[in-house]
Image 1 (spheres, rainbow, N blue to C red):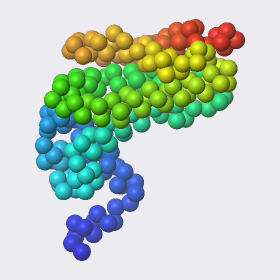
Image 2 (cartoon, one colour):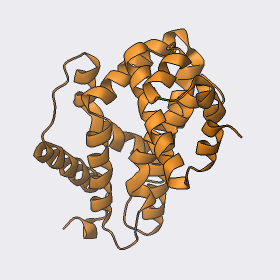
Image 3 (cartoon, rainbow, N blue to C red):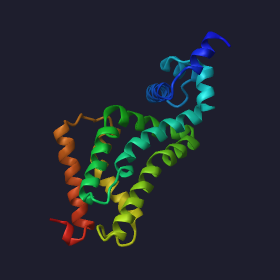
Image 4 (spheres, rainbow, N blue to C red):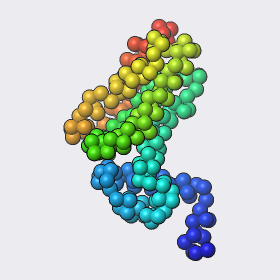
Length: 215
């Protein structure tokens, strides 16, 4: 066994996860700045790993791309995964909005989204892969949570949680995303993120929350 192989075998699970996270972070930055057609050698260099290691871990550039999107989507869904029956739905919705403003509406994230829009013209399958691994997963998770809350009598979506989930996500991103896609992005202070997150949750509850929960 070579010294390099032996070192790889000795990596702990936490070290492997850390290395994977660094690789996905580097891949995201390279995709954002160079576009989807960035070479795997460039991504490997940015991640400080060999190209073969990259292929061993992810199989192909498309699989690496999907893993990166799925990883980002998991961060966005984190509040829903930690949902509790004791929590007021307004608090959960505020958490979701806060995650969006923090992790999806920043300069880098909007820049990445702009790259994806352009890349999907040349690589339609990648546009579909991005949607299915990211936005679609978030929408479905939010719709499932809303359906549960409706069964508990804590939301009233009129029996269409999917449509209502779409409207809530649109309420969050709205004009902020439009400005960012046009290159007019400006950083939001933490207080502004909090103000907007609470505003979105309050508006949603006034539209879809039972009267007894509006106080």
